[in-house]
Image (cartoon, rainbow, N blue to C red; front, side):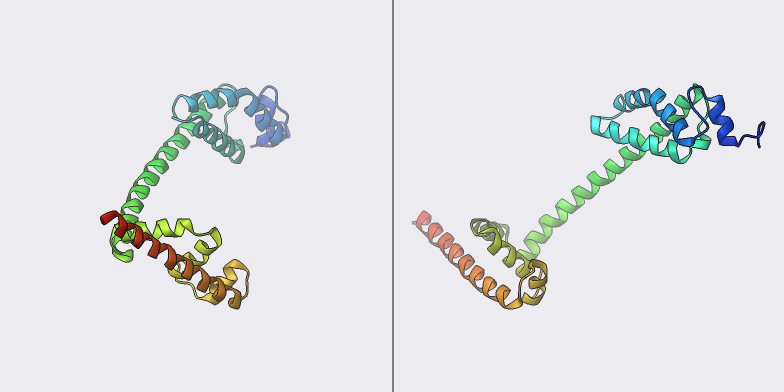
Length: 192
């Protein structure tokens, strides 16, 4: 439908005070007039200000993408509130899904730590020994033992030659063995 030689977007923009026929100008006017109100709406419905800012960003993205669907005048704010309500509901659902997934992952990690790496006290001893090694030794050992990579694959990850990785791996294993032996000696001394 065209009114007096104008496109529908131009007719909408012309009837919306403070905006020109350009979509970007109409959007800027919409943002100037309603962003603060939409942010306030989101702040009152979210726990963190970052979530409210994210909601405002997403609402404005929807408004930009669907600019022809945004009503003129005061109804624009109501339309934006409706979008904000749905955006915040989606954020809440996503947060609940992340929390459930995080819980399941923590349970799985705890189970795998015991199943794959032996009793928890041994796993903790190995981790403590690893923490006492240099970051370089720790990385090469973890890539080999826990990520199950070959020296050639580790070489790609670390941008080194396979020969250099084999040497590093041998030295790191020797240092780890020494750390674990020190743990054993400490434990024996504590028991006696």
